[in-house]
Length: 114
Image 1: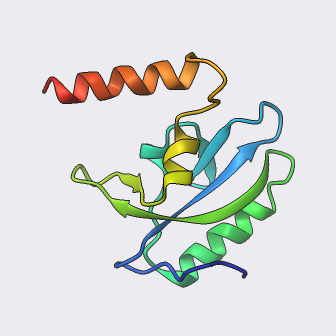
Image 2 (image 1 turned 60 degrees about the vertical axis):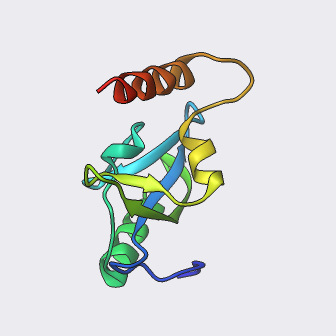
């Protein structure tokens, strides 16, 4: 597999792609896909990540361009992006403030009020 890093406990990964029909970003979860990156499976083992990536690549009727993206385990145990590109992708389209961007902003406000 072509990838820029090897998933490990020190450098875990998520699998991300774009939904074929709607174009938005999705993340692999239990062999399926979720629009919420916090629900993504976090891979710390190279062999398991490679098998999951092969599964993602076989789902060409659902997603396009799946790849491993480096992540980290956040304080709540959920995946968080380590690279600005992945942080940007999880916010959704940037042409105007709506949908995922509005929901993400609201969840950040709610989290800061805790």
